[in-house]
Length: 297
Ligand code: PEP
Ligand code: MN
Image (cartoon, rainbow, N blue to C red; front, side, top):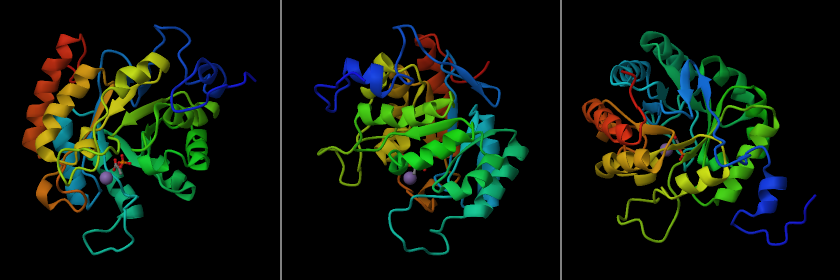
């Protein structure tokens, strides 16, 4: 074991060799690419994952699946199990849990779309794996190493969202836990960090786009960006999504809801079907500049 003489938030040569040898690039041109449900990650194609924050009901999730697929999204997102910040629930503000997973399964069939959904507890891994093509490890669980290890052991692809207070070093450490279990289909997702200034009282996070090139210097894993959670504010989603593509994002996660202002969770951030469709067209244009693609043509 090489002695790490200056452990800190920056990544050292020792870290790359000893702390996350599996996540670290082996040479400058080392970038992983893999297929998930027939969709290529890590190459010139940039898969879009879109859907509501929460799988609220069957009708909403099926309708959203059909609409986002029509606009070119490859994956439907939506949480049935959610890390809601407070324990109180109402009829509307309530995780749909087993029902939500069932509805995601129906949407998957009806729209012929891949599914990404969050798992919060190891005991629900089997259930979530029945429907998910990608298991989401939410930002709040980025350092829940037993959960990451067990999720990785299923050999389902994982997307690990960066905690809003985590350094790139910590994030790569989380990825290493997953890779260590022999699971090579690991995606990292930037979703905004906590900083003193976010330019609006209601915006809790700042999109750290600089982490995309920074991560790509060190790791071969595909880097996704979620501008919805990062901005927390609908009017900023379009520009930050286009900037994410330009910054080199390998995938984009977006919140899309049929009636955004009435979304059960985080109603300030989702966009509607029409805006999503327009945004997909703009993303495709920006992607063309860097020889990439968001929509298969
Ligand atoms: C989500 O994607 O639904 C979510 C809760 O995101 P995050 O973990 O980034 O807050
Ligand atoms: Mn959320």
